[in-house]
Image (tube, rainbow, N blue to C red):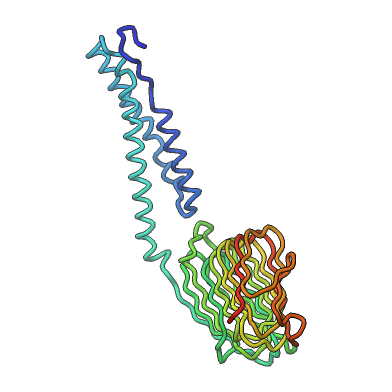
Length: 317
């Protein structure tokens, strides 16, 4: 309390700056593509200018109104801090708009198509390495692979490599992430169509995003999916020519798996599984089986492990 009975006003400069910095850091963590540091590093001296100007105003006010100097003793400095925050937000927004404008050249969407023939391969091992994005995989190709890639140039160019040793083909699709800040799944789309009539072993390593794997028409003998985060839809229905071993691991948020009714199925779920919903399957501990398990000549062995949040197992009608 001031001597004249008026409440003393303390400086709000430090609390305002703390709130501003905390909000910027929180937004940066929530949206990794937002990088405030170049602007902060360039324009931080503005806080000295604005707060200094506010203190000059405070000093002038005290000289003009000596009887009420306590009431306005820190108002100018606080207003200077607020002015700095407003200018900083405008600079950050301008930088964001500039980056969006610049995306017309540097970060423009790109498109590529690749076709791969099987050559003399009787079976193929396919490895797919994708940092983040949407992966759509299905059959129906007259070649070993028909692929389309839509991506931003800054996220790296997809590479398709294929070689044959003896009668086994080795297919590798990868993408070098040249910009660690580009993490939005909407910027990266892979559409892959495989041949139906060649035995395939598929290994998929995804950082984050969504996978839509329609494998009902493909002769997949082994599937390994390691996904950091996101959702995966796997369709294993249809007739199977040979046994299928499938492993789904990682921190997948949701896994929706469709299973055939005319093929024996056993599912083992373990690890940090959240909830499991099984439709048309019998449940015994961590194992889920259908009526044809142990009776059909072909069996699907499915293992789901790791930090999967929700698993939905649905047997086709």
